[in-house]
Each structure stands twice: as structure tokens, then as C-alpha cells.
Image 1: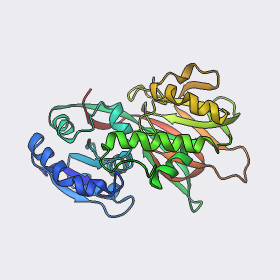
Image 2: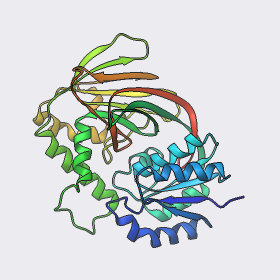
Image 3: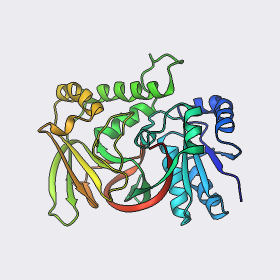
Length: 316
């Protein structure tokens, strides 16, 4: 039987995973056991490495990186058609998906879960959208997909986040600070995004939103509990729409989003759906799409729930 494979994105966490890998590997070896490794060197390579390994009989693949890396590895497993289990060794900026699985950010504790945690079979979202070149693309997602202000926040984070952040700030904290600071900077220049939404077989609705989120898991944006009621095993998306708030209201409401208490706000709506169709209200407008913390393309998009599609090693 092939050894478990660890797929490492050395550029995750703004490149700090490359420096941290020797310690990460030591913790994993001490608390988990033997494994093989592959390092990525280009976008989407984690997906192809995971798919190749799954087809060769590897039955446990561990993603070492952030939410984007985890999502890529999961995509590779799902694309392979093999029933391979996903593990997570966190080393990224956001850390949102591992929060939903109650996996701690410390590598030694995460390694213990990889060794002795339990296996859950979780739901996965599938989204069809337009690539940046305008061609139709499809991928799976584990956490949250969104449009609106969230895409501009992620652009700021990927551009480097706040330059005043000390270099020795822990990764789990630096991710939260980077997303939080970028959200506040973006709020001052945010205009409403106008979209058309259809949930399951209901009639289309025209909405003006700050953010529109299709959530499989609870967290996005570096720890914001955008969908506090989301469950990874209920076979439904939590659809959270944040209405056309002023910049001041966005800033003052930020603590409620982190705490997950924003659903009671009159400007926020929440419902469940298995299928969502989403497009720009103006056909000439390009609205970017965020998927698991990445920015792969734009609307129109169709989201479909796939129940119990993936096995994951987790702490709860």
C-alpha cells in the first residue's frame, strides 16, 4: 500500500510555508508517522498531483497550505473518481476550512488529528462559471463561494495585506488581521453589486448586495463566521445575502460577522438551497467570483450541492 502523500504549496502563507516546512515535516513525522511528499510549483498543480496519486492507489492525501491548496487537493481527489480521504496540515493565510473541521493551526496538534482523528463524509459544492478568458469552467468547492465586496478584499489580501504587520506574527493571527484590515480598507470604496438570483425552482430575484455568499461551511475571509448555521453534512447550501450597506455600517457590523450574529440584521437574509443560479443584473457588467479564497473567474455561475461526496479526517 502506498504511503500517505503530503502535497505542499511552498508559496502559501505569503511564502512562509517554504521556510516552515522542515518543522512542519518534523511535527508530522513525530505525531503521524511516515509519508511521501510532492511540492507544487504552479497554480492548479496540487489538483493534478492529487488526482494522479489517487489513481495510483494512494488512499490518504494531505494538503499542506491554505484554503486554496486544500481546495485544489480536494478537486484532484474528486476529479479522480476515487474514494480517497483528505487530510489537512494547515499552513496558510485564511485557515477557514480547517476551522469548520475543528483542526487547530499548530502543526503538531494537526498531526495528531491526522493520526487519531475521525473520518467524516462531507458535502461538496460544484460550481460552473466563466473563466477569466470567458470560457466555461467547472470546479468543486468545500467552503464558501461569493461575489461582491469579498472579491475585492481577497484581491487586497493577495496583494500583500497591511505592510505594518510584524513579520513574527503567528500565521493564524496574521491571516485574521490581513483580512480584517483589507475589509475595512475596501468598505470605504464599496458600491452595491447588482445581481439576479434563482434558488432551486423559485422565481428569479433582483438584488443589490454588498456580498452574496453560497456557503457549504461556516467560515470565510480569515475567520468571519459568515454562515454560522452551515453544516457540512446536511445536503444544502446556506445562502447569505448582505444588502446594500453604507461604508460606516459595514465597518461597525464587522464584529458581528466574525461572531456570527449578523443574521439577525434587517439587511441580511439567510436561506437554504440545493441549487443556485447567479448572474449580473446588467449583461455588460463583469462580476468576479470568489471560490474557497481564490478568484478563478466571474458570473454567470450555477452552484449545485453534492451530498456526502468526500471523506475528510477531522477533529470533531
